[in-house]
Length: 326
Image (cartoon, rainbow, N blue to C red; front, side):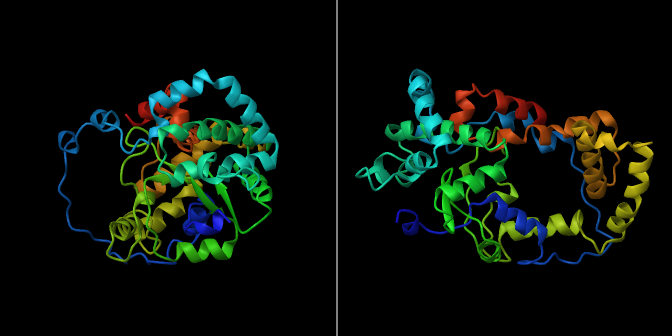
């Protein structure tokens, strides 16, 4: 009943993967001629300081992620661990801490993560998140550290219904629903994986996934068209030329490949980075630069964690990403 009363909007990361697979379903990329007008060069000073960007004042920090809340989470850690472990291993308890239960009066509004979201993340309901984030972490570990397995477990916990609760909102699993939402106009906020994004220290502000796609004249549409026309235009001669050279470049860089090397994550991530950067920018990177950029993959787990968890870990993960950005 609680889920049915909330607006059904797209929060699912899986849905965005669907969009990535069909990027032209809503607003096709604009054809662009190969010859472009000269672009004014900009020196480093005009771009500004990345240090100033990542160390700027934090944006939209909820009360339940304040340092006062973090202190409370540490002081009550034994109680949070007990509740979190039960929630992460028992699906019915997980549902209870997520959205409440009819067995406990007013638990939906006052004793659940959903209730905190609906009330605007007040500090007096921070305790609902202390146990919820630990429960979600335990459930993730119990499901082999696989996010897909975790989502399937959560869906089953909610009775395999069309919708379930994760993070700060509603998720859905059917391709039909995801495809319908992705082709519709969406009012978006600075959120990732249904969790309020940490900006500007972890995420940059106004990245593409934060912009509302409210029509072909929106900022989202303009940025997307520029991305596809300048970097990923399959009709462009330069793009087709770079794609045609990939096999030779990879073969020259990865001589005498062995089957067991496919288990070497560092090697694979380095080669994937080289291919992506070459397709987009026409530059085949050296190993040192590729290893640095592969940090965006190795630090991927940091991006899905809310501000409360980041601060609970003394911002160690955010500082690793800030170092990578700088």
